[in-house]
Length: 404
Image (cartoon, rainbow, N blue to C red; front, side):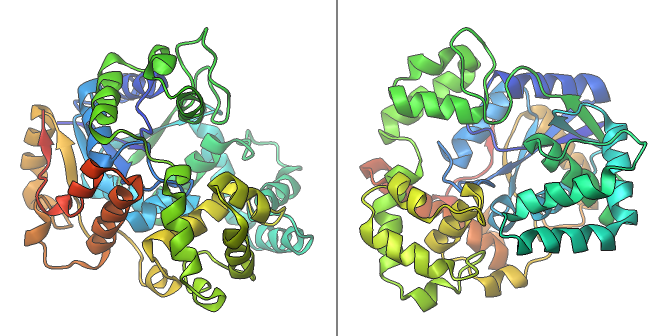
């Protein structure tokens, strides 16, 4: 069976994701689609709208054959490490190709960009350092340095100011650097850009736009045009059961408690907390009654909103610089959900997998990286602060992969 991999968060699974899924299958002529999906905390440094099991069910209902969890250490990492963990797992799962959505839509442009940055690496890094010294954020410094080294190039290159292009570039980079056998493909992203507002007249909107509408209206009817019926059904069931959706505003009392029970010096031990940010974080937590208020106090030109949210995620989950430095690549494959095709595919490659397959976490001996996933899941449910969510604490030990 021919398998294609995709890297997803599905927060929540919407019509744009369905388009990407269907086009990926068509473009690669694949029998199996495998999604590597973030767990309960996401790459932009925030809690997922609903837990990983619910999002995995959305994926399988919409046509994904197999959903694998991307470990916490990669799911909440900067783009290059997020991509590295994802591509490593898809390659380990014997995927023939991986297919990502991009604003660019041309694979050739991504390959040209990778080779340009590889051959001008020293010049690129020097330029980045110079821009950072001017006090601008790291992502902006990357983009400005890229403009400098690409201005004389005659090749078609990718616009690295676009969020999906940035991730796409890092997928290509990871595949080259890992010397992976997996082949890249890209599909042009349709209608809604990453940060666009959701428009009632459209049927495709970004996940960011959909979440914004949902939190403003607090009514699932307000987002029904943007989602497959199966996703809407899962969200309805979640709301009926859990009574709330995951967000930093809901988690803020717990996060604030964690911040303030530490000293400023202790906060500096957590991953991505750097350059004196521990002082700003502690001081803002003392004064802020909401997460929005807190973020507006500490947002700066130097650090993006996403970067600060990742700091908060690591403080909340207790993930330290010391732990981060021990992590290189994923050490296991953990299926969350599958259909019969996915189950058959997994069974057919099981003996040839280079990593252990974890269906029951209690039976897995190497608990270091997996322990982070389970801890994050428990803290996710704790942050929801509802009776049913409290009952889900520890559920990673009892829930086995969903088969639909």
